[in-house]
Image (cartoon, rainbow, N blue to C red):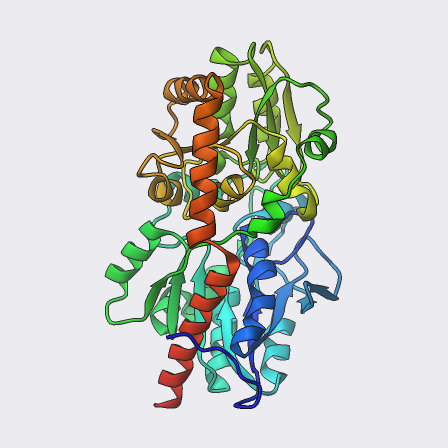
Length: 423
């Protein structure tokens, strides 16, 4: 059922979205999903606002695409906490608390629904507020919960050189008090962006509303990207073939396998650009060392302005996503929309998206030899690249526009709200 909004029928409903952080300083998938989806929700009768923390962005009031953002002070339940460790937490996986966010959420009037984009302590705080106000609450599992490899979980507990040898971590006590481990069981709906996560969630949460709602892409924005502008942005003037990998520079994304495949088999033929913020400490240095003796040039570029991301894709001849863990992989859709052929590791979302072999190639996770072979085949055949790119663009148009995603989300909101009203 599609619930299109007629202003004569009812007033818009207010949805409060709560991501762990929202920043252009380290742009990620959650930010892109909210920026693209929320402005479209007004068509279906939903106004949106974002409540988040000041992690990586200490501004208080802001907006994105006309959606108001309010940021609140936060802290990690750990003492002492080095600046290095705090930054790592801010960048990736930090389990934070915000008393002022929860307090302000409690004071908000006329909320129809709270939509979490984070769990753990902050999510549990918001859950307690929503239930005290008798508001329904749902959660989107952007980074996964049930289908996260142990290797990825271990990376979140990385200990740096400046971290204190001893300290007091009282987050477990707060977690027990807030019952964070029971959080998903209390949600009025659980939304999964990855197909593996969706299947695992259905098994773990029997009888609960669990939905698969994949990512989307702004087709017009990416299909109109400028290749020459992208090369200028990256500082690449060469007319040589270029491989691009647009993802945060992180062990999870496994750019090391890509660099080794390129260095050993392709560097005399093309250059390689890695574009994204570093979220695994020391990983940029490792990648730089791996590419040191290559015949071609390795470009490692930090995060770029979100408005420039389409042009960065267009600068490449092939896009690669070599992740070891990837719930969905917006990079796949963005590559297709930019008209760039795609090679991805056969895992999670990319494995599902490319399983038919019509829109790109898959390679086994961590297999630099087979990745190199796939790249050689694709770079040697311009017609093959063109076919993959066209097929990918067509699928993106048919299945993954942000308008379709907003429509799916509005259906879920209405199902939850109607069920809640019927209680």
